[in-house]
Image 1: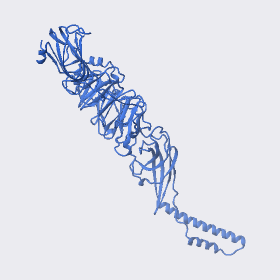
Image 2 (image 1 turned 60 degrees about the vertical axis):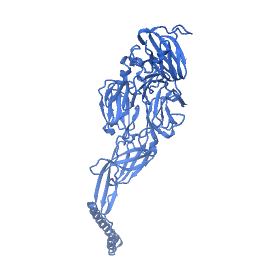
Image 3 (image 1 turned 90 degrees about the vertical axis):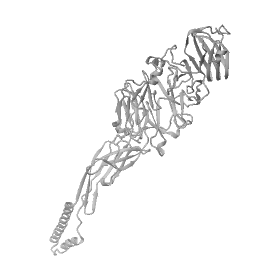
Image 4 (image 1 turned 90 degrees about the horizontal axis):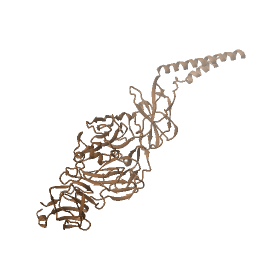
Length: 613
């Protein structure tokens, strides 16, 4: 019988029976780093970095030193506002709290939940403005001159002396006539003024918005209509007096309000609301005077539907171009560009099926649903469009969607779906699984499956630890699946700044593969020989400490313990110590367990045979 040399070590292939594995395939593979060709290398175990302040389901860190943690499923993104204080903000979504904002710089080494937190957005005023208008008084003509008054007085003085009763009656009549003449003359002058005065009547609609300490502005209140007049004569203009009362209420947990911005419609054909003035305040009612004319206004109210995001949005993500997105039910919502507090309902895209998960990809997002996936794309939030992909594979888990090396992967009932340029690619999944073996492997726990990316590999685990975690390399190397029996986690995170993956298990924050070598296990398929054979001698080369187990028909026949170096040892054909021995057989199986690097194993019937391999 020809000697056997084992120096090709493949991984698991659950889709194949143990007797029909691809070359170098394994029936067991645990904690193996398949990035090293033609040898078994222990994958590093996790390193426990710290104990967090609370058991959590999500963490965020910018530098790997200071963290935020949340006890519930959460998604966080850095502010799209790229400079100043606004860039320090961190936005995050959760099912219970909607979208909220905190400060990035307040993260701590203890990994607490954020404490200085506000609900995102500026609410709409619930009370319309109260507008009071006092119209201007009509201008009058110039009063009687001193000469006219003197002339009338002279008439009275010219009344001739008569008996007292007659004199005083005569004097009164002359004075009354003089007063009447002066009044008639004044009325005539007033009529001339009024006939030549220009009267402008303007109907305005008033609204107001709230503005907060972040200098963010919300949607306008209901409108109130008021009529004002302006009277002009010669070089004089008389205006209406306008008082506007605003009400501060109803903003609860939002970023604190510090003013109201008052707008009204202008003259001419435009119906835009133009900024008039602000009212400073945060509670109760505040009245201010509007003293500007419409001609003096220029700043238009730019956003009429800058509503806060609704409660229940999840999966917050940044799409680029200053746009945030999140979803609930069948709806995907978008913020205004570079206005993360403003989420107009008019931007909403509605899908046929409920959304399962979404991931920023390209100029938009890939969305998995309970039906077909879809691509959402666009460069502005008011022009987003959806394109349903002809891939009849529903997503199963919000957390099992991943963008890695130009491909988007997500978990489905049929296996791992790959999408590249909108085209289906099942090659990764089909290399290892059938539909049935995929479901069996995942113990029907697809709804809490997590995908994570680490150094060219796809790490898959269950938030409830329903199945043994495993890892697949994403290149074309054959046999690149290994179990990760020690990985127990509820969430993972990859920090771009450190290019390191972290996992969370309760209060433990672990650096994935950040510890020392873990114990690997590799077990070959059943080597079935056409004729029964016997191997009497073996040679192994390794660095580290390993145990080699030899099986025949599933029965352990012999075990040997090795340390670093090249070791030659005998294989007993008869019972030896506690082992039954390795008699002639047509079925042999090799198991290697240990830490370090295992390079090769040779089996032969004699010492000369080892040299021939």
